[in-house]
Image 1 (tube, one colour):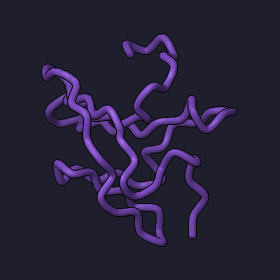
Image 2 (image 1 turned 90 degrees about the horizontal axis):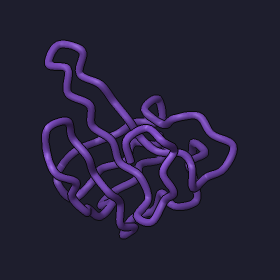
Image 3 (image 1 turned 60 degrees about the horizontal axis):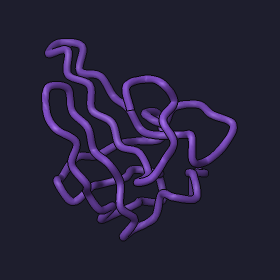
Image 4 (image 1 turned 90 degrees about the vertical axis):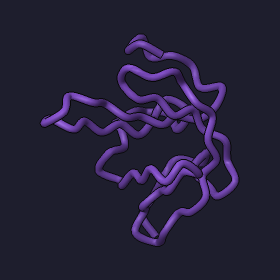
Length: 86
């Protein structure tokens, strides 16, 4: 299995954010052996979407759709802001 932060596990609450929308709390519903994470709203993130960081709590998933300009992200509930709009 690919290494993922400690907070990434089935049943864990996350804060989901999408450009132009309010934050929503979601639950991780699946984590595959390849590191693909699925949220209760159907959104999926891969290990390539995981931001670099020195601590598990500071790492989060973020992906950008360049065509639409929409950014989607998921981070552990209660994670400390990194100063990037959280």
